[in-house]
Structure formats: C-alpha cells, structure tokens
Length: 146
Image (cartoon, rainbow, N blue to C red; front, side, top):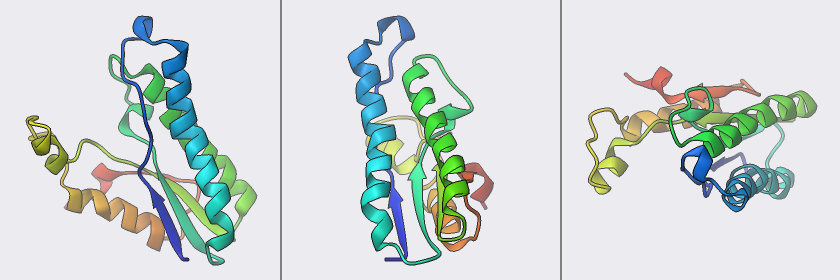
C-alpha cells in the first residue's frame, strides 16, 4: 500500500455549557483515538516513503460557536501529526488536510452552498498530501483552489 486517507470522525457540535463529558469523550474517542488506531493498524502495510493523511478541520484554527469539542480534537490531530512526523522521519509521510464545507454535501443537506468548496478542489489538497514529500503538515484546502 502506498497511501491511506481517512476522513472519519464522529464529532459533537454544541455550546460548551451544553456539552456533556460523554459528548467530549465521543468526539475524542472517534476523532483522535480512531485516527491513532488506524495509524497503528495501517502502518505495517504502507510502503517505505508512503503516506497517511488524516482529516482535521477548519475549526482547529478558526473556532466558531459550538465548536469547542471539535476545535479541541482537530487541533490535537494536527499536533499529533507534527509530533509523529518527527518520530517517523522519512519512513512515512503523515499529514492532515483541513477542509471546509464541501459544496456538493451542502447542497445534499439543503444548505446554501455559496461559501462551500467543491469536492474536486478539496481533493487537490489530499492529492498534494499523498504525492508530496512534506510531512508533519496541515494542508488548508483553500490553498488548492484554482
């Protein structure tokens, strides 16, 4: 295997004063520990110099109301990737992609998609992550829009 991309993560959006510890645990267990588990399972199958790319998110650096749990785990995932890259050296490239709302998904959800980014443009950031030589980076999808 040359590359793994993960876009998974069950997350809880809610105002901080309404979030329960169980909702925080669900978000941490799925978004952080789920990706670490995937990393440990996939690593032996990825060829030398291959890559693994996780999906963090825009709210890691740009929180919004109701995003405290999600901002926490996305920032933690970005930090994990930076630290893991130091341990992995050149054996494996590990990065995150920070997407925005995808236009096509917004349309399916009945949302106004004017501020969304197309799936094709979003995919460019993932492609860069797997084909590039950078490691320990978070790629913002906005940087890959034509």
